[in-house]
Image (cartoon, rainbow, N blue to C red):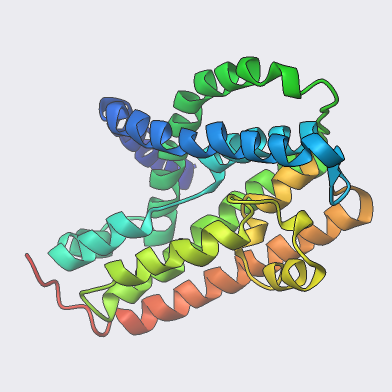
Amino acid sequence: MTAIRKWRAVFGIYFQDGLAYRASGLIWIITDLVTAVTMPLVWAKATSNTGMIGGFSRSDFVLYYLCQLLLGSFITSHIMWEVAMEIKEGQFSTQLVRPMSFYQFTFFRNLSWRIIRTGLFFPFFLILLWAYRGYLGEAHVTVGWTFWASVIMGHLVSFTFVTMMAMLALFTQEVMSIFELYYVPMLFLSGQLFPIAVLPDWATALAKWFPFYYTTGAPTEILIGWVSGDAALHLLGMQSVWIVFCFLMAKVLWAKGLKHYTGVGM
């Protein structure tokens, strides 16, 4: 019960903080809308002649991008920027004396903002559904337990991976360029720029060797029915593997990195 009270306190504090600065969240959402507005139109045009690409129709592609953006609002974490800045400025020292683990504190801090961001985006999602209603006549979604499990685990894959990356800031004061480089494979291999399922077989196989696909790509494909049955269970298993791997690596980097941390900036 003590641990739960701590989690609720951290979540509540940062939830209020997120509400106080919701304008910045809206700015990021408007930036992300560029993908939602342009990419469905690109694929709709591409399928206008053949009707199908890779076995998927125009409705499938439009629904894919809309669902990808909605799920990404909750799943995709960027907490490494805040953690790295706090390490660089010495504020990280307070984490070492808090009566709860750094991992728990960071998780609930991040979770509060992801929930706020999803809530802020949802009205825009409804507007997009209305705007693209003419393209969604054949679209359908499958909301089962595998989908909800994949969403939760996709969030954990993203969170554990970026937290692992954040630990690099304990070894060097300049990690921002590394974080920026992270977005190159993340955008291409997570399915945010284009569906992994329509890539050549070798590229699809390559994408599934990295954790990025298991963040937003996997739950989106389960939701719109591109993946089901045993294939969906396999994706859940791979998500579990990446969660455990990233968590353990973050622990290793934490233990070794604390020996290098000097509290510079205090």
